Image (cartoon, rainbow, N blue to C red; front, side, top):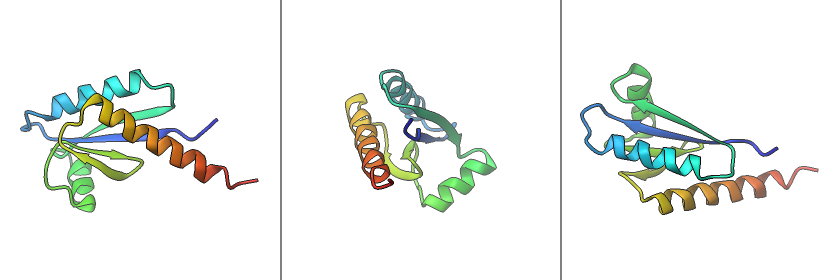
Length: 99
């Protein structure tokens, strides 16, 4: 079984676009056949503020896939699904080198 893909959505309680980014991410996860773990991280929490600082994120929402910033703002469902598919393909390629 391949490793799961981790999607984090960095949100802010004051950002009007953060809820939409979470909806798009949830739809992408529901429509995907891949193992995806979705997590919302609010910059209002200490963990979220530290995460934003470490990644140098200056705007929300920001979407990270497997720990790397993939998109800042609200992607379309199709765009997010393509980003996830590309990550899955890279992970399969990376894992194919092991014997």
